[in-house]
Image (tube, rainbow, N blue to C red):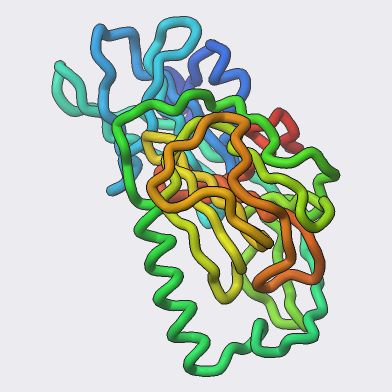
Length: 279
């Protein structure tokens, strides 16, 4: 009886969990911690609104004309069922998806600057101020839909440190790697992978010189360790426009670009959006 009950529960869940079959779903649907779930929401005349907990979720019309929720899944999300709240002309309902498993490797990094492993109290206060600025930028939701979700690479170069690595600095574990690194020379031009609005241009303690671009509907990209800026806060940028130059500022051992993507305030693997995801 218990096996039958589980089978029936799975059968009831499946219509909610099944993703759409349009282009965006085929491109982005990798429902693991740090990944993306694409959830079918139906074919109504108007776009529904979707929420994961308190965070608004991107909703687009896919190539098969279904409305879909494009959901960022936080790295700390456990395996199992997750539920969206969906609001449309019919009222409020639920749509679900299943989060699978993904194991991430460890990386050990040696830093000469010990303060970037254990900052002093003033540096901690600086970091806390900067962290709040970044969290506020990640949490914004503009109604404008992104110009594209299949992104260009911001630089042409070798992928080095992947997303999700467990990171150890001088033997001490810190937060997992929340972006994707490109090994490219100092001064390499960094290009916007989609249209958007620049929301941060700043020099941060850990990130170094940093740019944030808001692409719409909670789709945010971040570019770190830059040597120079080519935009200012509030600029509207176009896909392919040079926004900065690669450097080694902040907590970096050499020139590279750290590229970060956030959806509904969850940092997700940028490799998904450039067709380079490794299951």
